[in-house]
Image (cartoon, rainbow, N blue to C red; front, top):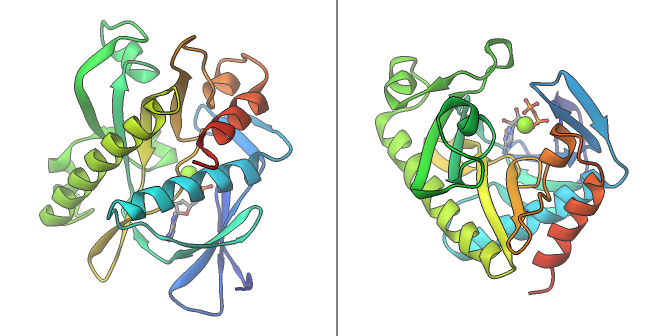
Length: 235
Ligand SMILES: Nc1ncnc2c1ncn2[C@@H]1O[C@H](COP(=O)(O)OP(=O)(O)O)[C@@H](O)[C@H]1O
Ligand SMILES: [Mg+2]
């Protein structure tokens, strides 16, 4: 499948049209951003690593009856996906306290949460992605009530599946961000699942292996991403 016109360039990926009106090519860039784009960086090979990690995880989820946009790999940095009408919502699941949760509440980083926390954010860089709840989503007509129920159901299932998937590889899934879209009303998991969109710690040492190495200037960002790919490959 060939790339045609560039449809959209975001912070971490480019979406291209293809010869098929219902398929896109999702290209993973080497760029890294944090603080809503204010902090920029990159490393050679990041796009390929994130493409590989996303592919492994999408295939794993498909194998467990999660509907995803993933169709096939096009090359090292590109995958063919179903074209979705995206919901402008970022869905966050948290198993262990970190990031904004630690700032917002009186809770220490690393504290294991009693049950997974499910959060919604409006995907709008200009507004700094404000937190919303289901009632905002309905009031703003972002999705139907049934779609919101499906999103919650799939998101919680994805979190449970991936948490144990990583646990078996001695990795802790601290939190993750998901994006959903629909085709004729039918909900699919879209976007990417990578160290840019998840917090992953080594289970023994609690060493951070994800984009926090970049956000917090911890160095050796590439090493963390490569370690995650190594541990989830060939199993
Ligand atoms: N299957 C899909 N169909 C259409 N759009 C998608 C699909 N998967 C992801 N997207 C959207 O494509 C863009 C991906 O590029 P990205 O660099 O992540 O952008 P952003 O900086 O806006 O997050 C996002 O806006 C995402 O919502
Ligand atoms: Mg994005």
